[in-house]
Image (cartoon, rainbow, N blue to C red; front, side):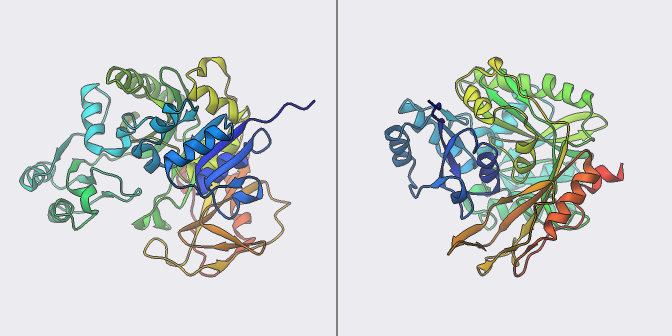
Length: 421
């Protein structure tokens, strides 16, 4: 008799959640809350919105593991609700999620445990912010304390602009309540890396380093977005950088969170700036990056279910996470008005992609009469695989060439940093 597949519930409905399920679909029976128009091709989408109701459903339906994709449910405490019901759930508790939910908590934590980060001031006082801006000669980054959907970080180009941004945040004009307490920190000049560790409270598995592209337009111009593309692993991360990240950042983070009474289980996402070979923490996030997740999932050459499940039950030591010796490059195809406003739904045309080494991760899509529609925002990610960045990038852009919807926009230079080296 065939062994029954474990039941997995994935919370979220973007490209990140799609890719987790897509690469787990052969080893688990999948459910999404809410999912999107494409997840229904290999999973069951649920329309349960409240976390208590979702936990009840998971309990009644014998769900073996719940994986939380986005940050908002984590910061709201979904993990605590599920754990109270005796359910196995992968993600940090509400207390541990403060690492992303509050920039102030994060910076104070970094300072307390001597984890490398930029000099900073956290305040709700405009004069204090202005004083620090002047001391730094305007070379600062201004951050809202609360969640802003990945958009609450501003990089001014002068002292006056920095003061104006601080004033607008603190008044509530920019980012509302989330910006009424701010962090102003020193601008670090180096290159950025995204690193992700699967954590079980004590142990961790560090995945290949990725690099994403936040700006809307080629050459890193235009407004910040949720991310227009990414690639992994990046050759910019040397073995020495991996070692320093493990020793100077991840280990003290896990030890520090345990001491604070918030043992850290889930994905720890490190937004790093590397300056002269030394990694500094720009930010923590408490979930996978999007679109980095879309490139990382296909690199894992062992059971995804086991990795997440063992992380959730505090037993990562018991598993071996294998990584394929390939590179993945992902190009985001966004809707016409992204990131400025909503776009009209429009049908998506996809040609034959059977000759391409890659896959499409769907995000902002709905399904109507068997056809997928672009419903706005970041619609999908074309991910190519190859033996190196160049080959993977060629496959990704070949994939982009087979996709079409009205107003589709994408960057033409994803992974240029790696190819310039």
